[in-house]
Image 1 (cartoon, rainbow, N blue to C red):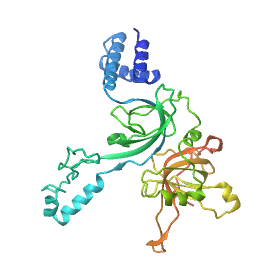
Image 2: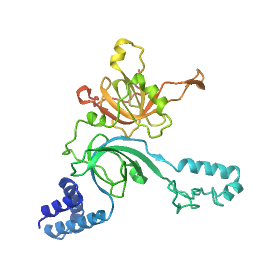
Image 3: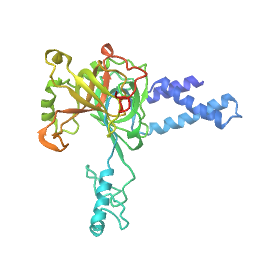
Amino acid sequence: MNKTEYLKKFAEKLSISFEQVESEFNEILKEEKEIHKDLPFEQQEMRALKRLSLVYKKQMRSPAVGFEGIIIAASDSVDIVAKQKREALEQYKNDPQNAIMEGVTDEEGTPLDTRATWSTGNANPRFGKPLPEHNYLRNIWVIATLAKSEESPKLYQMILSGDKANDELPIFKPTRFMAIDKGDKLNASTFTNFVVDETLNLPKINELVLQFLDKTKLSELESYHNLNKDDFNRLVVVEGDVSMLNLEPTSFGSRVLVLEDSEASLEDLESKSLTCWVGENIDIDFAEGSKIMVIGRTSQGNKKDAEGNKTEELADVTMNAFGVYALPDFKIELPKDIEPLTEENLE
């Protein structure tokens, strides 16, 4: 067989696109040209094919299978051991003997893993051992179907951990990826990488999202929040027009946009707006005046008085944006020379 025939065979076996296989082959071939400069091209090509076959053979032993679809939302990456380590160090500082006796730290004050079992009931093999330097987790939601399948797409939740939790994600872009199918959830594997594939034939993104998630009016968002605030995995969709966009990150690293219901604003200029906190992992490629879809999680704090102290009165509901999509028919392009709003250029 020639190179193309091998690549087609690999693509069919792993249920991934020929273009993806060809791209991975070209990366290995590029390495081979550097490593074995003196070999004839035909031998460099054959070595690249053999190396690629070993990679795919390893993947075949994994329970992960090919999927295609879009990521519609991604939470911020959170270091889940950071708080545990801070509390352990504080306990050791205040009462070293008690911290050691309770197994919170060792004699040197190193924070230890205090979980004897996992939530599944299985024993934790790292119980009593030092906590890792970091342990990042990130929730993402994808609408996908098995690659090359005639099945209808489904909405899945997936947890990314470790280095994968900090990877840049192609939100609202057609992608192919490997994952372990667990019914309504997908588990990531070492082979889970999201590869953009513009050749995928997907429905309009906003229409696809609304097949699985109900859209909530801005005027009804507080009622939605009160009903669902105890559900950590709550996910809501809103649409609106951007009346304010601040690309300068806050002290917490978020940009701010304000969303309006233009129909309600037309009748009442004091109608409620929605403040959205947009993390740096979310691409903002639109300007004020655009109509957008935002997917995320609602939150509600307390109002502050003139001195900045919290009061008993609840503030307006806000939203942590996990996915932001500008509706193509109502998108205003962001000027390429736009400057972030700062104290220096505020005037």
